[in-house]
Length: 557
Image (cartoon, rainbow, N blue to C red; front, side, top):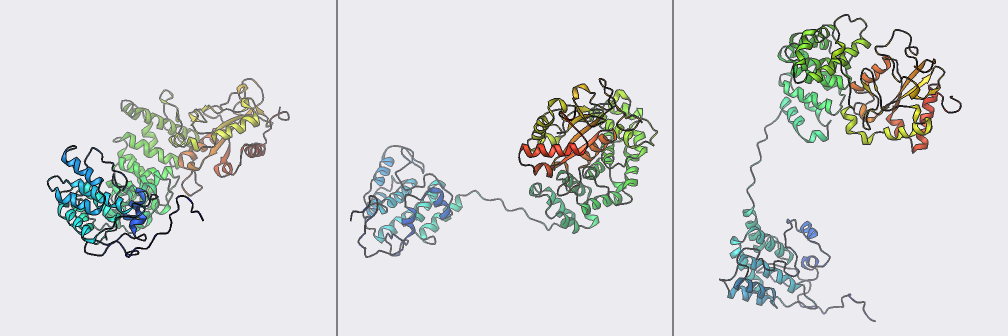
């Protein structure tokens, strides 16, 4: 029976068949069951060798033809007797010949010649059909030569020799491998001693945890337990600022931690400047959380009264957080709307951002504080509140449902029945740019018919009139009183993490739009994510609009 090409035939057993590879001083012969036969197989890649041997891969580390060519690896001349010796080693016919060339030419031997000899030895042992016999004394002498000269090897030659010695089956605890490994460790750059890790307790432990980059990826791990271990005197302003920033950045509405910040603020009131207070108050507004601490608001009012003239930007930042909580103190508003304060901030580098915040505060006073009788922001100082898309919407626009909702509305209503590129006075954006807040504005008659937006004034008057809602604005081209409907997309990042509470800025925006007379139609992200394809989304939008009593198409007029 003919044997298939490439299939090895039966081999006659040798007296040493089955023995394991050993180092100098031990009986040794090539064995098909040894690591040598496994690692010398053509299918074994350098990456796999490195994984098996736990030695960093080096180049060259294969046992094939020489890749060193005209460049001796261990240093030395590239031509002449040294290069001639390398060729002799590469062409040796037996292990004994390898040893003879190395022993007879001590003045010509360089460090890289030992790695050439080991590589050639591996080629001889892997040759077919029958490898040459290997005498134990030959391996012992070769090992002793390498051990004696390895202190002069460079790190590359040591790596190659160590790699090849392991491949050839020399035991890991034998003298050759141990000597090479010792030299390898000596060549490595010294590692700096690990920094002393003092026992961190309380505030120090929390500060270390919050400063660790790992907590940027896993924001909730160990925060509560770290804070619980801290004593009140260990919680420094810096630690609490780190905690407040961490909660705000990751949208973590953790009542226990927020209450701890509020209590710290009350206890340390006299020691805190407004620049620190603005950072401590930030998560309360962003996370839409009003603490249970009864002295929280009185404490902030006293700090604002004391620090308002010292740090204008910090003062306005504190008021912005309180605006989101619907807790604006009248006394602080009197101060920031005073002519002296406005004139003062006009000459500062942050004048524009302060004027934008003051414009929002003025809107909040107009819509939410009917009992306020103090000064207001002059009309000439007012600027659009949100002239650009919010940062979170710009960063996450590619994950938004804006595009598919726009397409659904286009197919359902037609392009002339909705607008996406309007900024509602006094400056709330409803879709000014492709990555802006993805809201949509519709105009409808009193009977519910969706009207072409181009024939209507899309805006309700601001400030709102005192007349009942629905009669505040009338179209300039029709006598039919119109209502304005804003489809509000509530994306996942508009909420606190793991909760159903809108972030303070989103809740404030929706609250103000509703107080200005716009009818809001929220589109929660859970409902949008459950729609499979455009046909389902169109059916979903149709149900939502019809639930408001809106009509369109031939039946809607």
